[in-house]
Image (cartoon, rainbow, N blue to C red; front, side, top):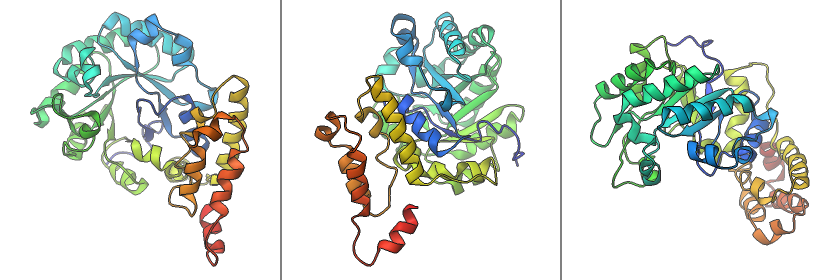
Length: 341
């Protein structure tokens, strides 16, 4: 059993998710939990070395602790990007060795790197030599038909030679041809025991498990075997799940914010962002699940995703969305209020 007090920082993480975990999403998640460890969506080395660095790396101090996930396979380029991440204040640099998309494969990085463990070790070493912050790797347990435990064990052992001490294990194979990224998150079977075995074989490393985890009860069970748990789409679609993370996994005396308090914090954030020219819908799109499973949640989502209303930039859209929550069937008001509050 893992020491429950070990590796506190990454005990509960929100996965890097393309097109989702941008700075607005991360700020929203931080309103729900002070301690959950946040990751950016993947940023390619090319985007940083030849693009708008500020656009990709800007974040608010409130988002910390936060890790930058990089996509790339050239040690020198990754080292330069890791240095940028450190200069911008990121707490960790994570190398993506798990994404199976064809676009990522064309760039010769992501899950296909699992077939080149020595190259990954070289990439990790170059980054470790360039920065003082931790360099971590997120990977799958196998590629295509290679599904024996020995493959991922050898991958971790080789990559560790480059200096990596934290491995985030998406406990499924990556199928590089024939499955979409979405199918790759659902069809290959989960093999949590592979991650557990990695922790037993490499007790000196920090092992974080990822894949198909939907509840904090499940997370608690995994923590008997590994050091941390990374939650992906469930944290996005059902974000209020994060509201109890601090009390259960970090501070027993922590008080969870109510949905209403989180909403108010986001309204204030949106006001500040609008002053910078941010489109209100860029923020509200991440908040659609705040009242998931609550009475009126569908109306809340409908209002906050109405492009015509969002185009006005009027923050009173929240008054209308909140009215949907209050429009409950007679006789259910008392019970519904208790759930929302």
